[in-house]
Amino acid sequence: MSLVPLADLPDDARVWCFGADPEPGPDTAGRLLEEMRAFVSEWTAHRKALRAGVAWRSDRFLCVAVDESAAGASGCSIDALSDRLRELERELGVSLLDAAPVWYRDAAGTVRSVSRETFRALAARGEIGADTPAFDLTVATLGELRAGRLERPVRESWHARLL
Image (cartoon, rainbow, N blue to C red; front, top):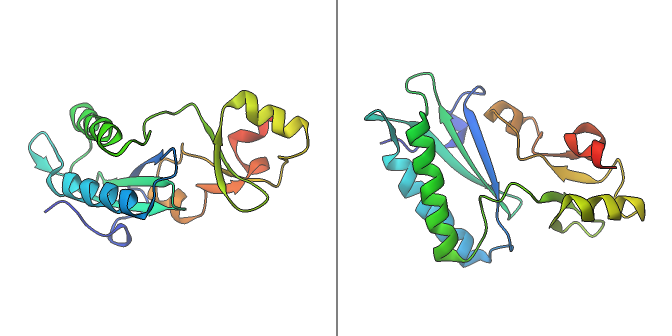
C-alpha cells in the first residue's frame, strides 16, 4: 500500500499543493480527500508503488507528498495525478489545477483567490500589504510545508513583487 500519513514521510519528500476554488463544502472536501487517498493508495511509477500521503490545509488546499527515496515520481505518474485531479474537478465542480490565481487571507481571515491584476489593485488600495498572509503553492518539499512556508506574509514570498 502506497498511502502513508504525512507525518511518516521525510522532510525532503516532494510536495504538490493545489488550491480548490470555489471553496468546497465539508462534503465535497471529504469526497476530494477520500478520492485522493484512494488514488495515492494505488499510485505507482514504473510499476513501483509510491510511498505518498495527502493532506487538506486551510479548507482550500490539497497537498500531495511523495517520498522519492525508494521510488521517484516519474513524468507518467505525475501525469496520472494531474489526470485524476482533472476528473475530480469535473465531478466535484471545483478548480484544482489552475495555477494562475493568487491566494491570500483577507483581514477577516477568509482565504481568497484573485487574479494577479486584482491582487495588485488591492495592494494599491491598501487592502493588501507586506504583512498580509499569502499562500505559496510553489512549496516543493514536505519540510517547507511543515515549516509553514505554505502560508506566510507577502513580504516573505514571491507575492512581494506584486505589491
